[in-house]
Length: 240
Image (tube, rainbow, N blue to C red; front, side, top):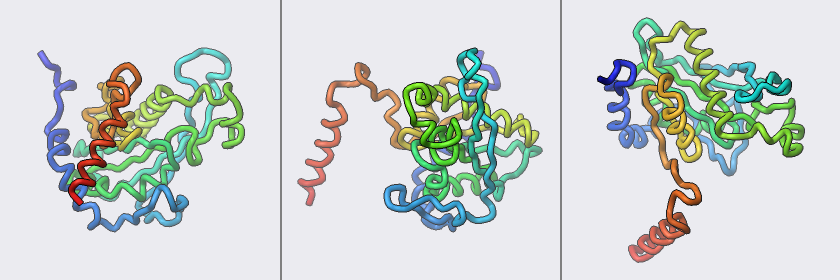
C-alpha cells in the first residue's frame, strides 16, 4: 500500500504538463534577464521582492573529524510575492543552484515566477557551495587552495546543504505541511533529480531540464554524447 506521503500530488503532474507553456510565457514576466556567459552578476538589479539570506552551513555533513564542525555562510534568495502562505499549504519551489553565482539563475530562469504565480508558490534559490558568496574557508583563494580545501566540494555535500536549508526554511516559516518541488537545469537538474531520490521525504517532486542524470562513464555508450551532438548538427545542416 502506498503511503500518503509517498504518493505524488497532483501538483507534480500539473507542473510537468505546463512546463512547455511556462517556458514560452517566461518572456512575458518582468524578471530581468541575464547572460551567464557575458554578464557579471548584479544583485542590485533584482527587484525588492527578492530577499537574500545567509545560512550558517556545515562544512562536512558526513564525517566526525574536528574540521567537520567548521561552518560557512551559504546564500539563498527568497521571493514570497505569490506565496499563498503556510496555512494554505501552498508549495515551495526550490531552485537548485549550480556552478555559477546564484544571482545569474535568479535573473535568468524566467519560467520560475510563472510556476509560482500559477500555484501561489514560494520561490527559493539556493547557491551551490564554492560559488558566488557561498565560499567555505572565507574566500575563493582559500577555498580553491589545495586538495584539502577542495575535498568538501562535491554534489553529495551540496545535496546535504540543500536539505539543511529546506528544513530550516520550513521550520522558520511554520511551513512543514507545504510541499517542496525542486527544480534545476543541466547540472542543477541532475541535483534536483538526485535530491528527489536521496531525500524523497523532503521533496514531493523534481523538475529537471537538460539534465544528463545518468551520463557517467560505464553507464552510457562510449562517445554517446559526441554521437548525439554530431547527429543533431548533421540533421540541422541538411535542413539549411
